[in-house]
Image 1 (cartoon, rainbow, N blue to C red):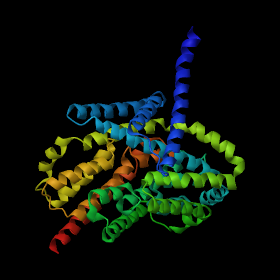
Image 2 (image 1 turned 60 degrees about the vertical axis):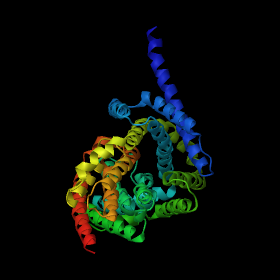
Image 3 (image 1 turned 120 degrees about the vertical axis):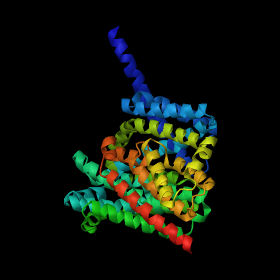
Image 4 (image 1 turned 30 degrees about the horizontal axis):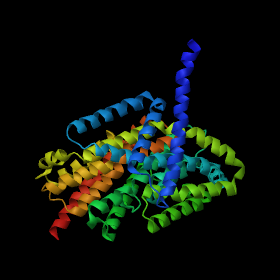
Length: 447
């Protein structure tokens, strides 16, 4: 009887793994279908998300389960405090987009890593001194991140061989996080900018874009100096063989966003996945079988990320739907000096990210609070502060997609990306932004 008792849980776990992989594969197909106008009915989408979470539970680590449990407890407290139950359904529906996005990035990483062009780029990249790799990674992640955002991880991670030491993978992941975060300051492809345009229509002008780009350039210089400067060109030259592939992927994403109404994350999925499959079949057809096997085996490895993102999105929707929260916070902000208001924005955005709240939700609450409080903050300054703080927050958020994807793509323990020099970068960058935006707000008040 003992063997059968041991085999039971193993069999159940294997069944959950198969179901989890199948659900993720089906969500990719559903995302591709959205480009054709096909969508799941809301109740079916919620049911699919619940099933995905149920199949992920037996696969996750104990630490992940502990974090998720705390987030669920916070969700329960908000529900008891009057938050609508429909907010949970909205969070589960949001999770389906990310459930497709994460495995697609994994597929891209595996395929790109097998292309002959990447093999040539990798051979040149690993011959560079450490400083050349670091500065090259910063330039490439900043450029690709401005269009593909988090998807840049999947294009750059294969520049290191599979057997690269963990310290090298960690260093490259940390620099990629910095480069990608700059897109939140200004890029029309970043969720932060799309959010600002939706909630604050006055923030969609070229002037605001130029201001965000200027602040992103200043943050880039800070990141470059943290890596002790050095020439920016050697790393880019080493990656030249793969840059045409990156350019095609970025161009296809731009075209899709410009000509359709699908979301930006969906656009990355729909634009890059078919192109990656075509590149594999054209340039490395003999690797198709092994790539398929690697992708299928890897689909279950993102269960921790799927669970955290789903619960975090539900928590965020509940916070957004809590009517008394904004009314309670507004008096705390009203009458404060502008530098303190800006400090509160950065602390709330970054602190919220650290405890697992998506920046989108913190931003929505802040806009509501600042709209009711007499803060003396110009709208364009407020928008830039929220977008910049958003960029810093995603670097240190354990349940944020940007950091989760970095953990996944570079195979580095999440805590090694959280406890890093990026904390210093976030602190220095936030301080510089608070001072600069305070001066800008004072100048705008004069004219």
